[in-house]
Amino acid sequence: MILQLVSWGLDKDGPVLVDVSETAQKAGVSVEYVRTEIAWLVEHEFLALDGDVDGMVRVWVNPAVAFMPGTDPRVAAARHRFPYFDTAEGGMSAEEPVVVYAYEPELWNAVYDAQRELFEDPPIFQPCPAHAW
Image (tube, rainbow, N blue to C red; front, side):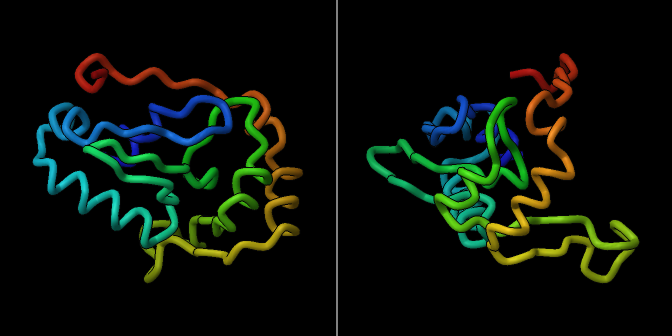
């Protein structure tokens, strides 16, 4: 849930400024929980931490998990040497449902080429009213 809230703050190919207190309030959790989740997401390379001052956290989002339309994921991936996450064969029933591929420019090029239309003009999904904050 925290990753989704962070991702909603994406603006083009830039970092996201997260107000930890505001995010905790929106999610209905404690500030400590938000900080713990962000630390876990950074440790597992879903996010890259760029600063943490006075309750404001600045992070970069791995384009394998969220990106803005028109964003070239190869640039963002190269900036932080982000790994690429993919679903394992067998999906959620697999022993390890997610495969993590270490950063390689060639892999990100292949991902971009294979999914060019998704990166250049992805479908936009609106959250249901119950989840729209």
